[in-house]
Image: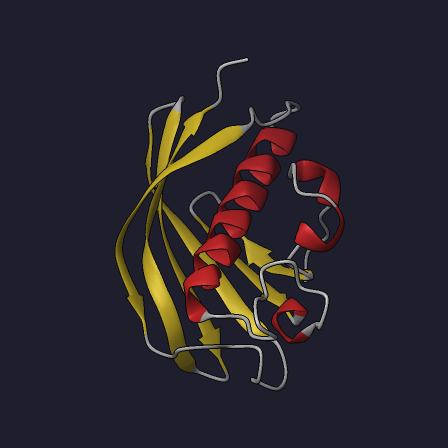
Length: 141
């Protein structure tokens, strides 16, 4: 298991959805979390966390990956804006009732320096819950 800091991502408080960094390299990241089961998860509505919100889990793994890559180079990752989700497949309706942690995976497909595309997938005990692709552009500051 690798170490990481929440300071790598812009999310604060309960919106920090990811708990553990398992492993990462230049292209991939694997994280784990149990925040889907937390009653105070800010993405819940009507007491449930719907599977569509797993896209945010994937996006946060992407942000951590970008932050780790920048940190390795002695830099800070530029803030990014999620601009598209594509080919998203949801295999369950909700996830708040799943016991134990979720596996959150992201793989960098494209890096232009100012935009990035990743594939992501979320699993629970070997079962695929959600997958898709996401594109991010650097926020203009």
